[in-house]
Image 1 (tube, rainbow over the protein chains, first blue to last red):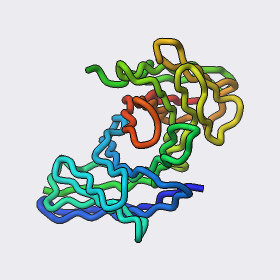
Image 2: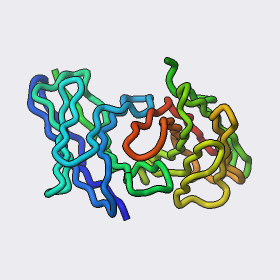
Image 3: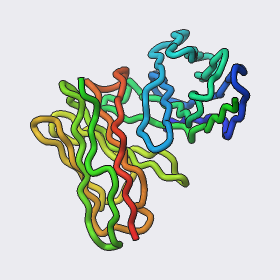
Amino acid sequence: GNSVTQMEGPVTLSEEAFLTINCTYTATGYPSLFWYVQYPGEGLQLLLKATKADDKGSNKGFEATYRKETTSFHLEKGSVQVSDSAVYFCALSDRNNNAGNMLTFGGGTRLMVKP
Amino acid sequence: KAGVTQTPRYLIKTRGQQVTLSCSPISGHRSVSWYQQTPGQGLQFLFEYFSETQRNKGNFPGRFSGRQFSNSRSEMNVSTLELGDSALYLCASSLDQGAYEQYFGPGTRLTVT
């Protein structure tokens, strides 16, 4: 079956530091990959996505590249802000699964950015 | 365009009762999925509806059920509530399957006492 593994948190950084959150996946098909962010008391917000190998998703300074050879989709940001403090989820959707939508999520990584 | 809305936002129920949660997708979206989020199990897929038909189902007991109406609005029902059903229930809508993004609502926080 499909699975997503991401680094455990919390990750604590100082403002303007470089961020990497590792994500690796196992999929039977050819998945699309996503990063979602969850702020306290809220639902999930789509941060970025990639649908095929070597695609780079980017949004709000965050980037992630779909690496099929290493089955990875690591999230990076060059300079974090206090407002980036949240929980980040890596997820996949198996496009070969003709039964429909189902997102498989990693366990989430809490990011704390200190001023 | 309005986002995904869920009602109610908070709910407190007693063990053994049943509960119905509602989700209105983004206008034009025909797929609605439900997820359960708990500290111990993380985010788990419950089921998905597309054009009023259940298209996919996760590994949850039959106490969890859902339906979708012709306007794409969806409800999920949990019968005979257990303490372990306390969770944040998230609804997500999408145009279709696979590569399409899913957009999440704010969730319904269910507490079972």
